[in-house]
Length: 193
Image (cartoon, rainbow, N blue to C red; front, side):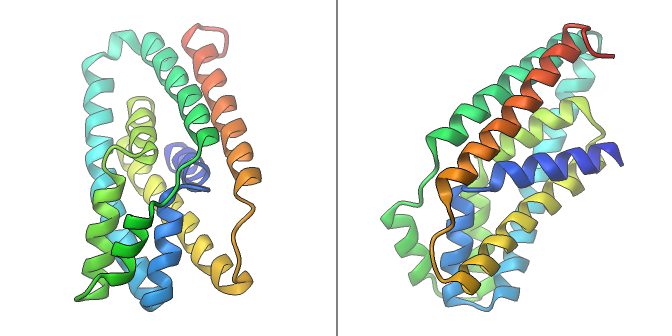
């Protein structure tokens, strides 16, 4: 349960202001919100299952080095904080692809999200979490966190009809990543029990 709650929170925060949210809003302008959410959920579940598998095997293979892994994970979270502050934008080309996509909505959205998430910070954050937490809770939690953040983007975009306060969201997400990073480093150094 701890892995589920932690990964839900971390991935929700990581997804705020991410280009995936912009893609979700773009697809929602073209397709039914339900189809967009199904496509996002399927793609996220697959990418994050691979992510937790990678993280779980890294954590298991280096079990005697858990302190070092925690410190490296903490440094990764600090890097995610900087990455979040830098921002993530949907290019004109990516937005145009989302607008022009043909065929089944769920398949179009799913494939686009699958490709967009490969190597993305949410994938890397999920790998990082899986080195420390249980794989199943991390997988389900990271999937729920990402889908919830993207669903929020669709709803807010539809209701407000304007851009989210992107800079404030980026700063808040970066601060939370930094806090998680510092806590992991302190845990790995043996300062926190």
